[in-house]
Image (cartoon, rainbow, N blue to C red):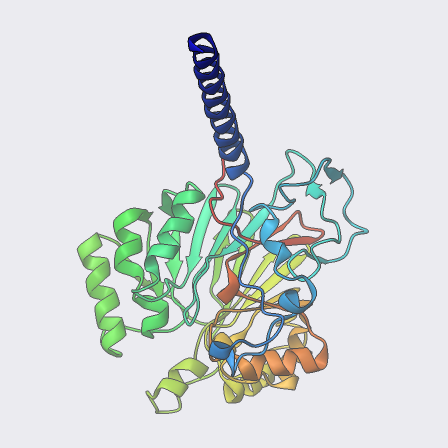
Length: 368
């Protein structure tokens, strides 16, 4: 009887050790798998209770949010092989792996290819976009105060320690108020404004924050061309205030900026509203605003004017909004124009000069 009890205790001990070893192995496997886990933006196949006024974007209807599985500069974590094209001239101008995650899902630009990158952080109801080319970095707008930390997080993960310039499209809080936090975390060569210090309270704050950070403020005007490495950024200030300083007047007078590199283009539009869009088209040469990708005006709050879209002819629009963009999304969906909304996460666009590769940002991404 004693012998049997001893054997029983030995078997119980052996079983316990086996279970502990198995648990440790499972935990280790879980840790290995955690590195591949990404946060998928909320699928929005139908409007939820909190989104009664929200029209789901194309990627949520067609892709179920699968674009979130893609890495920061292309590809996805589950691909077993990578297709690198040495000649991309015959590929689509915009490869949109957010709306169509299965098309070209294993494509990457050939190793060593010089690229222009534009990164939109995961912010909404405000604007910020980082342009990277040839080791140079320029930020268009700073976001608002509340979401400035998302902009700083983007810069940190991209290992951007210095911005050559911050260019403000117009002086409103959702484009300027992120400046103090950004300037406290990275070096800024200069901030460019299209208004003097005493125009409104936002310009006064901006100039004061810049002085406190030791960053010079420079004025820019219509037709100014900024260099970002070998890329160019041309400003259009063709809509005047017409004696008004109202919010809409300032929005309409936003600097519209055309980014050009080799054969590819992107148009940044600030908050220009429909009346300003019509005026702008009438005040520029035909074809001047044509762009592959459009940063949709005013966060999608207003429907875009058809004459403006006819002038730009974008193959993809990017909307920086959360809850107020029904007019934009309804109009784009009705016309079959693809778009991406930053409410579901940031966006990275990169080009070799032949085609754009557009991906959704993911959580825990980092450039090594």
